[in-house]
Length: 72
Image (cartoon, rainbow, N blue to C red; front, side, top):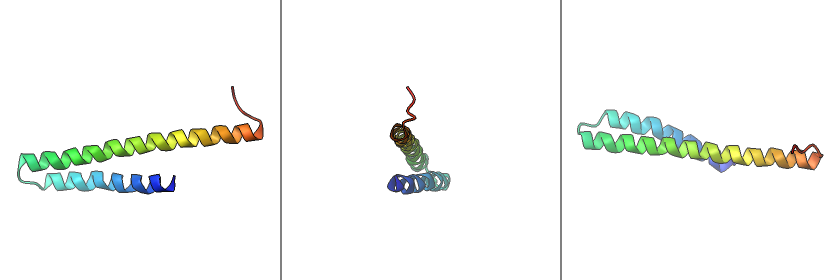
């Protein structure tokens, strides 16, 4: 999970950096490519959040089962 957290940090920084880069581009094609890259990084962050949420859910369920407090 530590690797995913670091990857999420890099991807979230890429959103801001690619957006700023796009705003500095002279041609619409270059701007579009930078903004598409920023959008891709945003989707990547969302996917990482989904994975982390799923892992945490499984971990909590296993902890409850180990303690004998599992919910049905």
